[in-house]
Image (cartoon, rainbow, N blue to C red; front, side, top):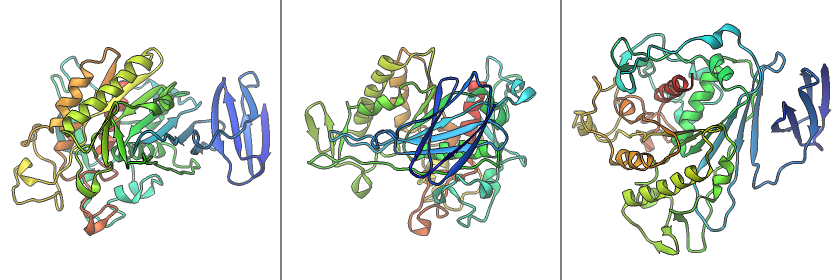
Length: 414
């Protein structure tokens, strides 16, 4: 059955239900859709636009041939007069499509002694996995080459895990990933490091389907109390947006140790008590414990997989990697050799692992801290959003290190 539908500006939202799973997107101009599908599994209906505070923006990429695959990005506003939030919510939905024998490709060599998160970086001229200059999803703050970074060597490294018997990762295959996640949703919940990983994943998928159409909007809200910006350690009201997602990938830490003008809150609240400040590790642990309680109460392991992106490190102190003269990541062109970072792990790692160890529901830690610590060369430095006026040794160039985070995620779900 082939169906053509033309919608005008007066009908701003379309809902397509494929096997009873809805796909929402906003129309910004008159659109004609060609829908070809078995009539027993396809229904088409117009839907009312959701309340603004629940649905803020949508993104759809449509494969030109048939249904193929669909990607949706949904940004949601958390409106509450009682809490402060600075969290980005990104949703990836994969729809339809069959990719034949590619989906049957096996994993890399992963014996019982293989640790995907311990290893070293090796030069590999077959990397990066995509051309960042042709990926429309890379924003300026991560687009190091577009911003003038003169070297490309940082993108030509492959992560080699430790383990007996030639432990290795399967190379990321976008079509296999789409088939594996067909009909499922992936949501990234976190800060700009989540956005770093999200944009990496969309570029990796875009390289598998470069002719897909797309449109993107994003908004992040900060909600204030009358007293000012308040960080609530025991509030997780926005968790209702995470319900029903097939794969959740959480992240937090980047802002917890900020002080002065860059601190994104004025007060910290626990229960009815409001503090001007408290030990940041204590606050971090309390907030993670609140999140862990939400996981215990709301996650059905048979329906949802939960991942936590480990602590993504910064490189502002060369003493920690054996180069005391370096005051930042500027000019770094090679990873730290070997598999051990001289400066050790950030204290937040122990806090995170301590909370995760107490959760009874299955939560997989994407333990990317050590492998990322070794990549002092992977940051934007002066080739980020702020240029020479804002040294960035916290985020990561794309293509780059977050691609490996996603390659490991890919191997874990194969």
